[in-house]
Image (cartoon, rainbow, N blue to C red; front, top):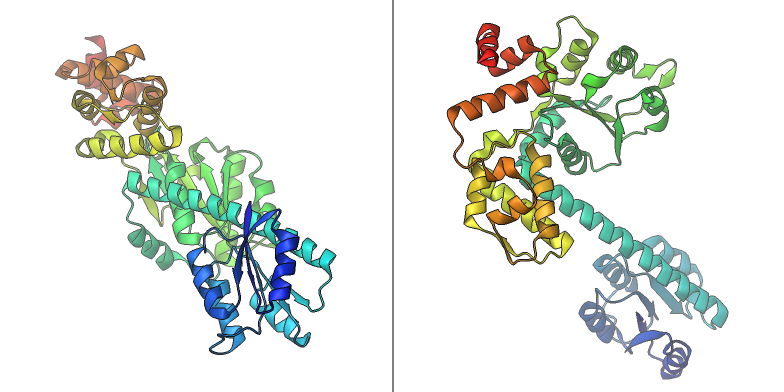
Length: 417
């Protein structure tokens, strides 16, 4: 049931409004401005709309100042003013943000329609406010997870931005590092504009410049997968932006491009290729997502953060993680990075029926690579890194040796053994 605050110094009008609205709404009644302020502040976050008379006792100053104060207290609560004053005031109140103004005598059909419209408007605003809050909370969660200093990042971006163009951002990462999380932080905390998330494809020519507007952000994941035609298009886009801001006679929108590239792919790019030229344009602001294996000292903090975040979303039965499981998580190498950790914690929360999650629950889910990795031998660790390097380079032994920092001859010898 919606809550309405009705304020008027005429008792007959209040009695009439109670008879009209009390069946479908919860009513709060005020007879002067002091009662309005008291009840408005006490019920600020449960009110759905207010219906006020301007000329009431207790007005200490300009009525416009009082109305403005109430409107700014909570912008999701629409205000309907009913007054017998000159209709000229109607325009002034509407300019301030009042939802509707009704003069006396009142047309009851119009008033009921106005109240219904105000309640619909309030529901839409609250739904949007809740959505934006969830979005902001998610961005803050990613920021804590990646340990991004947003103030330093903002300074770097603003230093590179100009009046005619927004500087692009390049994200280097390993598979499973979730570069989209960092792109979201850049967009939400720096631009605060609409976020376009598009996978690299032949549709680039349709997205830019026709579907983007000033202030938008375009995120391209895995630009190493771009074809030659798409690479050429993006290169020509950068050149056009730097020269006159036009492409094929059309004015380019002032948008930010955020692109991610695999760390191994970036190292393997040959000099002189179009992708190398594209990376050079993008690398003015370069960010890197550190893989979990380089953050072993932070694993407990990271696991706790993800676990608490998922526990709230899932309303899970399990309450905490055992110390032995924390030790396993800390000593494991996490070859698939954040995505692997995310999947494992999700599975544990969905399947575990105990308050405390133990090592045995990993075995039940057949995560044997983690459960059995407590005391790996040196040979096990070397073999694991070699297999991973070969997997990332699609079996290219020369590239794998370069990634591991050893000579190809050493790698061939290790594989034979």
